[in-house]
Picture 1 (cartoon, rainbow, N blue to C red):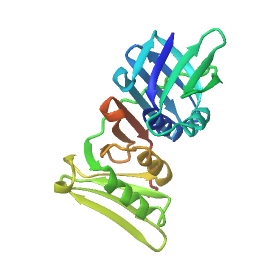
Picture 2 (picture 1 turned 30 degrees about the vertical axis):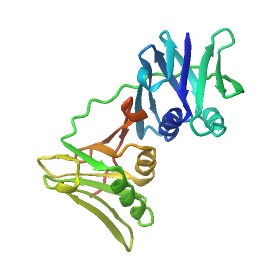
Picture 3 (picture 1 turned 60 degrees about the vertical axis):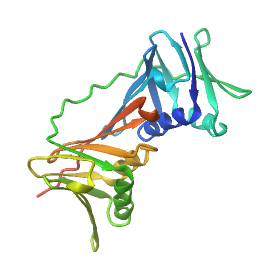
Length: 245
């Protein structure tokens, strides 16, 4: 059983985060809230998202899982007015998700979850942790997009740097420790990543004022931020590009 009321803005945050990597996803629902894990088709990145019961206006649910098409939710959310609250319910007899906005109702066919597994989150020990303002990170990304298709993330005991190098030009965003919200790093670490993936992940942050980056040398980056006003959180994991010597 699943019945809920949720603000359109909150659901839009969820769809933006998940739609960055996949077109379909399995939602695990209970009275505690909603959770999901998904890996992109290229197996380069994964996302873990948790939305607590407090993020909903109302939530009544027994443990269940439903598979949803991200584009169908996007279409519905385009119809939502400012401040709209969506009503969601699972029609178990017909296996459809019933979504109502104001006086408009759509009955969505669900995706078969039989082939959808819950990917395991790799247990990666990342020695550096940086918490940076979202606007600073976005500025560095925008500057890099005309330079290269990949970026380097570097952390030292005193600084965080985002840099991109092209055939003729280069760009670097350097933030000393006093301009960061947090920095935990003993030894210098550096990894190279696809700018396209990293950019899309950071752009999905939305209203979160800061982003936490967990780094290691030639290790994945773990990107963490809150959503739904702190009633939920997101963790992305992005594999590195290994430079050839």
